[in-house]
Image (cartoon, rainbow, N blue to C red):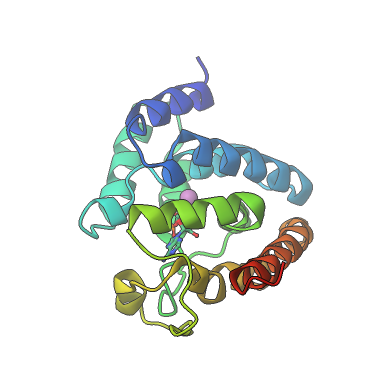
Length: 214
Ligand code: ADP
Ligand code: NI
């Protein structure tokens, strides 16, 4: 089996009990998006594919906030495969830096392959899938759908972002509607524009229905 096939088998096994927003299908969507973007942008495909496949191998949200478990697991796995030292370090840097965790986080890698993986992961947080994932996550966290009295909070610190208990609609203003302007590659910018309009339409409908206007 190829390195990619082995990686797929490993990730599927590790994520067998993951919650809906972070299951194998999230990884598969990000992997497919990443391949599409990588081809357009002429990025190193092996590094991009490994970065996409391994980026959520252990989400800190489900490991008491420990952000080092995922990268450690990914590296241990990569040592079992025929991957050059250089590529392993590159993939490791990608997965250490990929997550959006509120305003303060600084990225300390800016390779094309990193940009492609981050664009693909962010793409899966917007559009129809993004809407579904947000409400799924909100339900998992026992959050309300919407409360007109609780205003969205922009520029939260990493800690505030993690602790927030706001209703799910707020997440659109705190993150989802900001993602289109954070895309790095031209290919992703174009795809994100379409998904962004879809979310705006959804919000318009949501408020109209909320007030019984539709
Ligand atoms: P990833 O690890 O895939 O980059 P996150 O772990 O930040 O993404 O979030 C997983 C999914 O849950 C995303 O679709 C994201 O929009 C959603 N999500 C994260 N935080 C919240 C929140 N506070 N409210 C609603 N949805 C959220
Ligand atoms: Ni992800």
